[in-house]
Length: 248
Image (tube, rainbow, N blue to C red; front, top):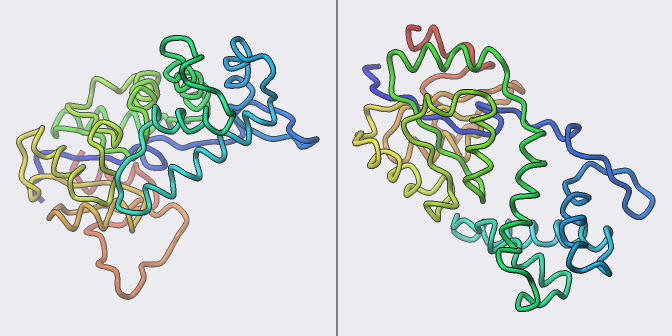
């Protein structure tokens, strides 16, 4: 356990996502939580004939298509590509859009998503203690790095991390080895010098194990480990339990 660094997954590990914090909208007579209302306002400033229903459907369809592509080989579909597909769903010609229109839509979506992220106070306390002894990093599957930076910045912990590596910048998603290897290389670490902490057995734990890292599985829901799955080095139910394991 002579770790030099602790690497964390972001969503559902360091921060929790509360969908009830998303804005409430009404689509086809149904009340829904979505960023679509704010994205629709951004679209309607230039394309006033586009309806909220169309924007909601376009966001859903562009997400489904991105997920379909990601499932093929774990390549990331970054936010600009997803929102370019979103425009196709709305039958909007990119040539008719203002400069940086796609980025502005991604930023609107980012701001509202960030409001739904909850950073438990005791996570911050843990990170402060760990940072005094270990090098810290985040390795996240997400399509837009600014979202991760906003969330960690809002929590007041962004400066504790030596590296914040998001899949849109690397081009590959966990469990692919390249995102783990890119992080280790950036920090000048070998796999045996780092512990990876995440909430997904199939993505976080299996991916980190495949490149030779020890792992800590945050098992909040009390899930069981499938028989054919290599067990994590540590299993915890709350991130706070990591402190005693790592001696802080």
